Image (cartoon, rainbow, N blue to C red; front, side):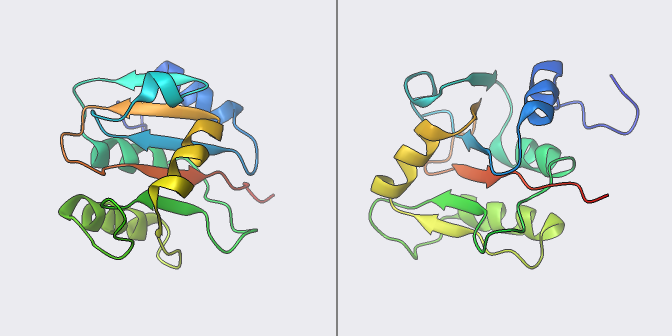
Amino acid sequence: MLKGLNPLLSPELLATLRAMGHGDEIALVDGNYPGQEHGRRLIRLDGHHLIPVLDAILSVLPIDDFVPEAIFRATVKQERDVLDPVHLDIIACCARYEPERAVIPLLGPEFYPRVRAAHTVIQTSEPRLYGNVILRKGVIYP
């Protein structure tokens, strides 16, 4: 345990977040997602739901402000604009840290390849379907 850090930020997760470079992406996925198959690197956070993990990560990870879109979410099947409760929770959590950033919906054909290319996949035990989000790391300014 460390003072001032969310305990969900395990040693492995903290090392990964620190090792990521500007523009690298990290995917946080629900319990049904094929994380083992899609992740180049996989960190399992079994027993934890998506939103607390997202909140912990956003408490330390800068989001890329060099690009217009840096936060992405899965969609309900092919319905780009449908917002399930998990999406509303994702949007609210991201807005606490990045109030000027939109959470961009990506249909499966756009979302899945992006997860496969991500630096790391974080597999949660989120039971809600489509509870998946991708964050693009930014920089810490001097």
